[in-house]
Length: 203
Image (cartoon, rainbow, N blue to C red; front, side, top):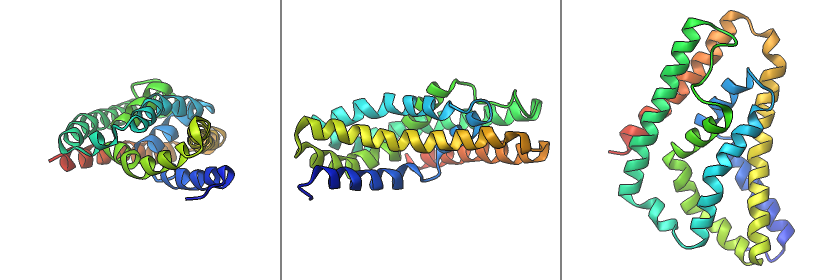
């Protein structure tokens, strides 16, 4: 454990990016929402923080072990899995009706960020293990260290999801109908696939 706050925050940024850049439900939501708005990534990051900030506070207060409980993981897997399957099926249905502006998820970007984050049991597991270790290290620098760690971590989320939506939005004029079908179809399959996986893993 480093005794230098700057080095700790730098290492926390690297670890945070390695987690946020992994493909998953939030990434699929960012790609889908990015087609409609360049700043959807920032809104998704805000929704992500709605789940993440209270979770950091709970872990700081000593509740990390609850998120590794088999019963809690089962509940998260079942409920979260069903929600992701619903979102994926919805995207498929709107995509089939009208490719383009009307192909979308059933929620706004902030809500999509909340649901795709809260529906992922492995997100909670990451925070109860890797995240908890980072929080412990952050508290060695006092409350300021914890706050700065939270800001650095969220900045990684914000930067990544915003870069996705800006890239999608800027390039959408190059998308043919076939490309749109492929991209939205993949996003829908990602949501459904993760949903089914989370649901099955719960048992």
